[in-house]
Image (cartoon, rainbow, N blue to C red):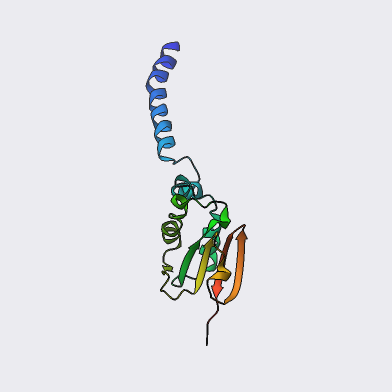
Length: 139
């Protein structure tokens, strides 16, 4: 009987440890939301609630602009440069437009949207320095 337990331990335990190590390395033991947020956290984006709010508020197919500033707790340009790519990644199929575009929505990651020269139907504050705003249609 002891022989069977020893053999089973020698054969099974190393295999289980390899699987556990592999799961940890690729993150499959973490919840899906945590795995989806990992790219942003890796580059220093910590205020992710604004992206979740934008995904809920902005209809698919609408145009949006991303504006950044120091009001979200960081003014590190190495962090802020990742806001637009992460927004594009998380908000597809919504369309990101540049400064020359005609946005229907504004996603603010630390910027003061009142300085953009736009009128808003509604502003949805998400946190300190974070907001999603519906741009008013001009007649």
